[in-house]
Image (cartoon, rainbow over all chains, first blue to last red; front, side, top):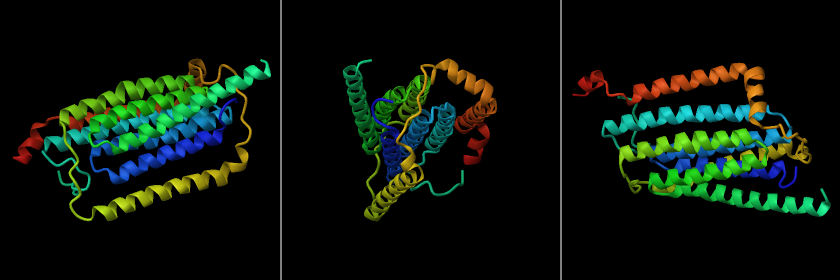
Length: 102
Length: 185
């Protein structure tokens, strides 16, 4: 493979995952927490596809596509929760949403 | 291919990789640092586009196309709809103990990053020197389709069931039912 080796892709994936984890931990708006989760999933996906290319085995790409479907499902449920929270006129703040009562 | 042409191609691939990697990290930082979720969602589009370039460099054409279609085409648009529905809300300033919580979060994320790097390099560091050679078919739609519908049919079906359940859950969470409103009032 010309260009950067698998290690470079893995380093980039690790940094992307770290940025996403930082966003999940420091942000309190649930919408931005969901966007940061997308960053983490994309970091994992990049590692999967880099390994798929490294071992010349397409199963990693299949796994990446499955991760994409799971990410879409997660966004669907998460945005449904945000809409439900907004309808109840609660604050969009994950630190203040501390009880499970409806 | 002559060596000169090959090295020129190598340089081009490196340049594309560096630009895509830089914009990937920069837009990732932008996603988590914008105060307005609308701009964060727009920054995520840049992140997804640069990741699609990465996937193309890794000869995963179908995954790159699916990434752009599914994420930039569907997920981010849904995000933008919900952000528009919720309305502009700025994050309130920290009231008490912000420094400690932020410091802990930064430390935890840094520790996670170090752990990932150490674990990956310990597990596979010596093994990443050589790359498998792949043919032009690798990553094409027909290749992915054959893998998905022949070798991984069960995963394919489970994916569809997961998506269906998530769609039903989203509808139930977002629906205006009379029952919950009567409980509220």
